[in-house]
Image 1: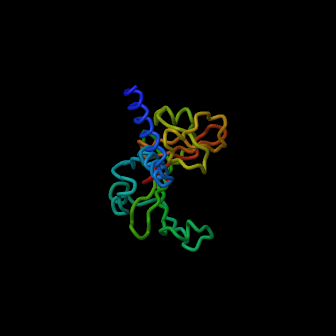
Image 2 (image 1 turned 90 degrees about the vertical axis):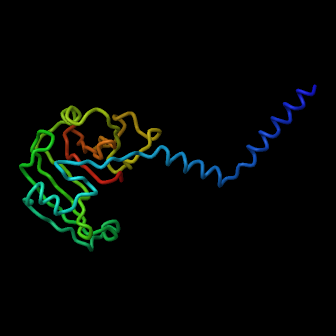
Image 3 (image 1 turned 180 degrees about the vertical axis):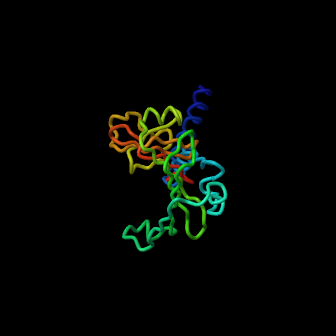
Length: 194
């Protein structure tokens, strides 16, 4: 009988402790869980240029003068463009990357001079060829969806996605944009998951 009373008190204490958990604590627990699941995005280094770290002068030093230069207007209609750092795109040709010579677009932040992204454009490359070159260690999202997905949020069925799709490689700091006909639009290296 004594053991039954002690056990009942123990259960009561556990029950009351669980009931005392506030909505604020529950919300904090959800935030902590999301932080633990966050994607680890590792910015790439391509031919001595590290996305998010290297500067314009590094690019000129290692890759030479660009084939073209385009400055983005600061007064765009898109709020994201208006509120972001002005950018310049530099174009390169005839630089070998991953055994290929794609057309290359490099976005530089005008205020910081930092390389913000590098995009590779291929004349012809299939999804299968891209996977052979870059590996099958990716997850897939529809273009426009958040690519910063935790493991628990990743979509598994490619057939239900809306094209174009992105093959996302967080450990390489890159994503590959794939058209509906399974050809590659671009390979994109960014400084952070966005």
